[in-house]
Image 1 (cartoon, rainbow, N blue to C red):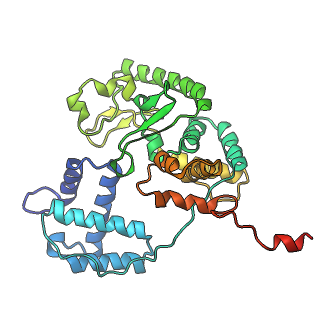
Image 2: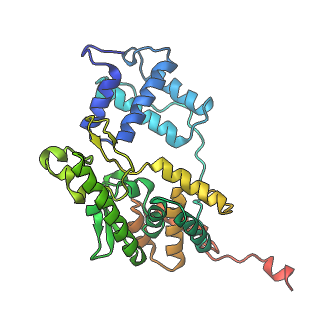
Image 3: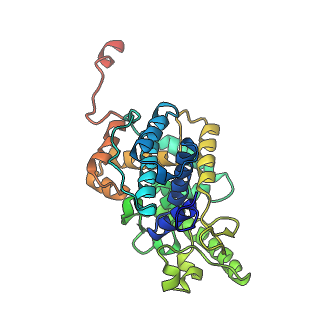
Length: 329
């Protein structure tokens, strides 16, 4: 899979993605979709294919693989990136393909009692699971916003967190619950000891985005740039091969929260995002203005936030069933 540049195609995708400063997860996803697209067409080079081949692949994903609309959309974005940014080839507009039916899903939110049960069970587990879960529920963070949080993003004076370059490349400021402050300070003191040991061992570097390690060569070892939730082990950075301490494995946190919720007897399907849903729902239950909730969540459109009004205790309009006046008379 090479073109005239004598650089393997997948490596060209990797280079193009990094030039755009996309995340490592996006890089992995785009390469994966390029592989699947090529294998689907019996390993033909993409330059020998075009819009019709993309349509047939996207239709296959919908009909045979039953992928979600979001997954199919990611595949389309990856292939458009391949042709436009890597191969520099113009293709016809992509529109006439089978799309999966998009189901309107209401977010699952826990009651406050259920949140308390989950957090109490997580507190018994070793590691940072409890504190991370408290951030997602107490500050409404997305999973990766929590994992990528750095020491410099915490403002103890103003009791807030600075969430930088979040979904859609947006920044926002969210609340830092007063109750978490002493636990967070104790946690950071342990993380700092870990960082100092790394420095003593000749390591201590952390990944910096947007080539900041070249602009600020000493920043990668400074305390304020370190992750709040670091991994227990160092690993080689796939971008430059250096041994660094990355953030905590998000999949491990996902598995732990789902496992603990099940063991605690919660009947709802609980994920990390359920805590964020619960954060929004409980704020609205307390009478918080929906625009404020929108800002805390980082939603671009208030209509996205309005979906939480449908999962309040009595629904958005506090409708009481007429059955109540019949059965209990």
